[in-house]
Amino acid sequence: MDIVIRTEGLTKYYGKTLGITDLNLEVKKGEVFGCLGPNGAGKTTTIRMLLDFIHPTRGKATIFGLDTHKDNVKIKRCVGYLPGELELYKNLKGGEFLRHFAYLRGGVDWKHVQELAERLDFDMSKPIRSLSSGNKHKVGLIQAFMHKPELLILDEPTVGLDPLMQQEFYQMVHEAKEQGQTLFISSHILPEVERICDRVGFIRRGKLIEVEDVSDLKKHAFRQIEIHFAGSVPKEEFENLSVVRDVMVEDSVLRFTVAGPLDAVIKAAAKFEVVNVISHEPNLEDIFLTYYGGDENAAS
Amino acid sequence: MILFAFFICAFFPTIQESAAELETYMANMPEALIAAFGGTGSNIASPEGYLNVEFFSMMLPMMFIIYAIGFGGGVIAGEEEAGTLDLLLANPIPRWRVLLEKFLAMVGGITILSFMSWLGLVAGIYVYNMNIGLGQLAAATFSSALLSFSFGVIALAVSCLTGRRGISMGIATALAVGTYLLYVLAQVAKSLEKYQKLSPFYYHLAPDPLANGLKLGDMAFFIGTIVVFLAISFIAFQRRDLAV
Ligand SMILES: Nc1ncnc2c1ncn2[C@@H]1O[C@H](COP(=O)(O)OP(=O)(O)O)[C@@H](O)[C@H]1O
Ligand SMILES: [Mg+2]
Image (cartoon, rainbow over all chains, first blue to last red; front, side):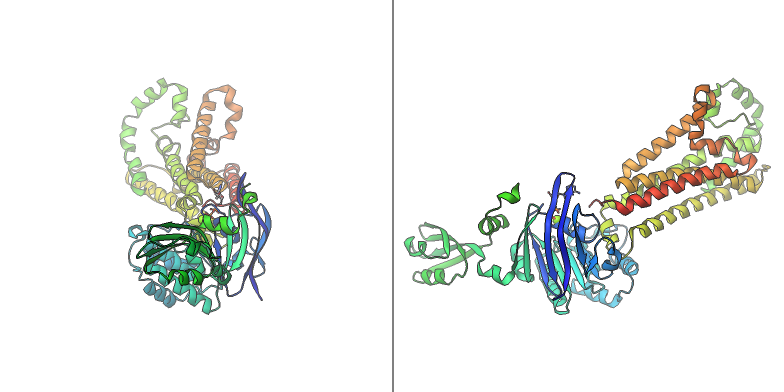
């Protein structure tokens, strides 16, 4: 299997502040790799090292087998990038900006740019100064995708997109994958990563904690669930199920945390009259605490 | 710029008329003040003297310097602070080429500015009958431009080192003001005389390019300064971590 991105002991300190440490990672050709972690975890640091904007304190990284520092220009020919904090030339119109970037890059099919703009419902004739953050984001996405790069590196790509555009973006990711492109996406939103990625690397406080297939992740994905019943329910009925934790009953409302398949819980609940089921996505901190509990060394 | 240079010439006849008065006035001024206005004892009623005092010793370099420092300080740092540099450098373009292109734009800008200023002067001396060679004007303009450009490249170097526009412009401006004062004070204070050659202004003001044309040595000083700080810019920008 071809490896597109490989990092070996990649480490970045900003003075004394840790950005990321000892990152060993392999991203395979054609996969969608998610880099998941809360704010300040080191996602942007990693990405900016891959693009040679900042230089590692230690370690190295290769993309397409090329050194990210020495061969950065060669690498960038085949990479599309969306920065986490996107800023555009405000004095240009959306279309002018894209033309400029297409020119700088060279070999961009303008028709494809127009297709992307149409897809994202983006009006190229408006001055960037007047665009909403969502619309600016579209410019960022278009310039990342416009040259059909072999590798897309997207730093928190859905932040600021409205739900409709998020769906469109997920679709774009899906199609990119079908066309054999590789994607490296950072995010702090678990459901998003579950939805679009094949594998996820969990990053927290500068450390890669675990890399996992999304299909495995889903098997033991846990959520907080609330079941509202027509009448009160006995706690014992649920307490002893192996997949649940933290069971609480308040009159007719049952609250619990479940890890793994829901089947047993649903079957138990089915004995009573169910009014409503509410599922809360866990926040990242909870996930990290639950699954990768021994994070004390990560915190040090 | 053209108009500005032209109008500077437009005041020449008035000055010439009141020349006698001015001369006595000047004679009474303390030496330091005369030096500060760029007077090197030359006759303000002559076209050379007039243009030196009014234009080439202070006004033109100052305008060029402001332009050059503004440009140089903003070249990399401006884009870095605006947050657009990441996106720009995600294109398959090496950093040195981005810098080179911006530097060339800077050269272009100051060249155009110089040329416009020269055109204005040419028109001015023609209309107001000032007896000065076009070559002399070009020499003095060119010397002003090189002087200013040196400060612009210093600003560029600081901008490449720090990524901060304000700091770059501040340092380069402080240097310009400081070295100008050094030059002027050294004119009158004997103790400072040996430091005068440290001031870039010395290589523009002392040789009086309007009267004497360009001297290789002076130009070499400017070009040397520019080359050194340009090299610093390239090395610094190539190596540095970029701010977000
Ligand atoms: N330029 C910088 N200077 C100093 N510290 C930084 C800089 N950039 C990031 N950091 C620090 O490095 C850590 C990782 O940040 P970052 O990579 O931006 O995280 P993420 O993208 O996952 O939110 C944070 O603690 C952050 O404060
Ligand atoms: Mg980030």
